[in-house]
Image (cartoon, rainbow, N blue to C red):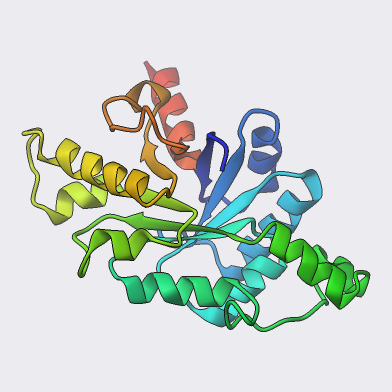
Length: 233
């Protein structure tokens, strides 16, 4: 994948998405740390699809039916948070790909298939050319070998905040930076693009993301809150 930047969206309003389309490469719609329901997310995805804004959906676990509905609504891919095992990565892969590669159920009655306007063979060919983006978020110690967990992903994404908490890192002793660097090195060895999150653009180097292919910057609510605090002062 090409290097890109984006931000996380927790608000159901499509105005935020319209603001992002001219300044960011993509957005991530968060279904883990927001009050967004599936209906909200599907409406946002269809809006993103209509304005040409790539959108990932961040989910806390793989539910094949839900993943299928999100992809059919126009999601560019799925970001699985708390990825800690090869079995979880395999489940994500299976839910996002049609047979014989995966186990995703197929229908043409959705926007990305033109609501039946595309022939089945043409739709499947398009999916093979541009399959869903699989982003695995590593934010704790993994089960088994790290290379086995991230092999087959499109992006190995480090969740620095949860990673710090999971390892009991209350102070900046360099351990977190070492953990992030380890994930980045393993991703490079497996030829998997590396990614991560930073609250602000100037925090990218401190987060160890200066060479990352995908960087998510803050969230809509964080940006709004920071603006309000600045206004108050």
